[in-house]
Length: 326
Ligand code: TRP
Image 1: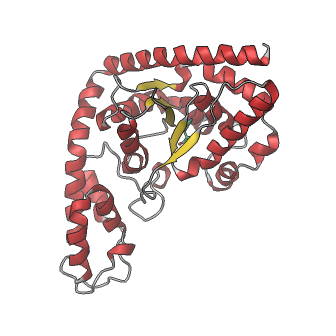
Image 2: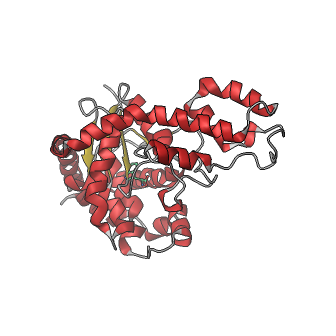
Image 3: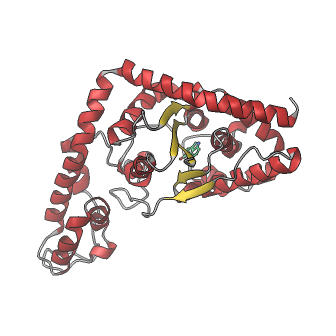
């Protein structure tokens, strides 16, 4: 029997190269080895977008089109929307009952978000419980592993702690303790060298037009010590080189060599990178546009996914209720 994985993304906007590098590429590769559940976490998105959630429905369809265009195959993997499987919320309630407040209050992602996120009031009841809903997402499918970025590790650790506490109280081995599967590559930075994020406006979206891609890539920050064209460059500290290394490894060695001896300049280097990214995204965008022309087709895929997900979720939930005695 294949091991099961679950992972999810919040539908808060367009997907970008960071999602492709950090998650989607892995998700695609895992499809043959694991029994995969890929979820659009709209309730998690609601926790931060509650003041203006009107774009969420469109974002869900847009993100799912990107999933499939990037190679997630709805015949192999279960693709579904969190709110289509209400069993998550029932398990979330039960897990909330056994989760000490102190575990949530000390969660580093919670403290960081309260500090860093601007323009949103995240001091809500639901936001504190964010990781408990995430635990329910994972446990309701009895997932053995969760592919995540480093930033999500505290949530996974909390999930494991909740699993152990459930076992302690109810003496039932319903849930395996899920492992984190970390992405090998370090995080892809945005065009300004900060973390790639929609809110920083520094992301290259999977749906950007060739012109937009070119414009964005040409503003990328390179080696700050390379002032004149003749100066030798330091590819190892250059984000442009990092993009080559990640997306186009066969080109990266020659370009690094040429950069170190000032045979190629930053402008030319970035122009080339823009062309490569445009070519990389072209087939993805073709598939994406075709999928988006048939919105009903996408909705049917999600409906089918929700059906498969619910079947598993309902079974787990009835085991859980029996164990708890409700
Ligand atoms: N919190 C995750 C993120 O922001 C999204 C998410 C929700 C998730 N539920 C999940 C990821 C369950 C993995 C497993 O990226």
